Amino acid sequence: MNTAVYLLLAAGLVLFGGTTLAAFYWAARTGQFRDLEAGSRVIFDDDEPVGTATDAFADRRADRPLRRAVDGAAATRRQ
Image 1 (cartoon, one colour):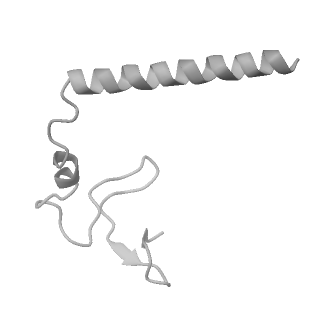
Image 2 (cartoon, helix red, strand yellow):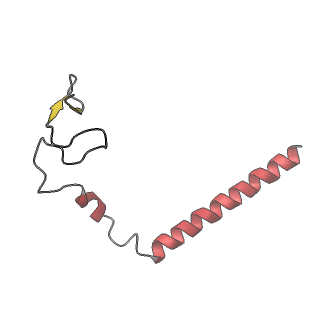
Image 3 (cartoon, one colour):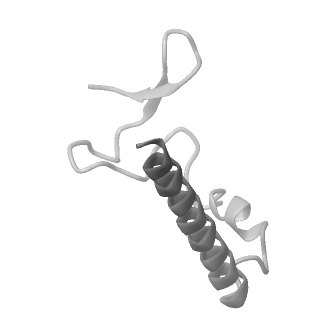
């Protein structure tokens, strides 16, 4: 019983390692690592007005202004 568990664990680790290496190879081959700072710049949009959310969930409207939470830690929507 213990040998089967160890073999299954070893096979899982080899599979995980192979998948990780394949994903890294794919990312390097397709240029995913060429510009690492582009993703951090894309979240800052100069056209988005301050204090107004322009993104919306399906059950909420995007045109409502944001307000600060009671503790000041997060912005929430008015209901």
